[in-house]
Image 1 (tube, rainbow, N blue to C red):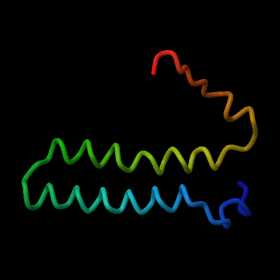
Image 2 (tube, rainbow, N blue to C red; image 1 turned 45 degrees about the horizontal axis):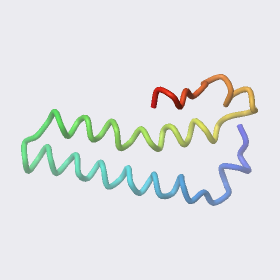
Image 3 (cartoon, rainbow, N blue to C red; image 1 turned 180 degrees about the vertical axis):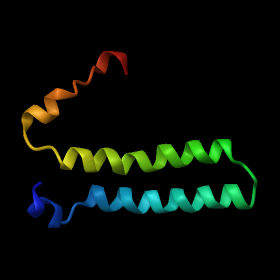
Image 4 (cartoon, rainbow, N blue to C red; image 1 turned 90 degrees about the vertical axis):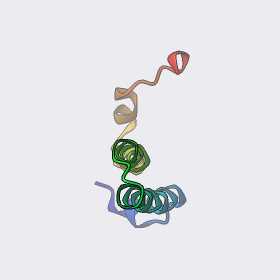
Length: 76
């Protein structure tokens, strides 16, 4: 793992972390105040997966890691 890369400032990681914290607070609010469980769970999953995808991309070791998961733009 490239620890030097992890130590450097990464604006995308910082913003996604702040966004995930806001999503968790929204999830708690929806569950506790509005008694909404289904929608809130989906919001939690979607909102926190952004940070997971960013961390996975930072952890890529080589160009092969990025080529392993092809992206097909035609189906998007």
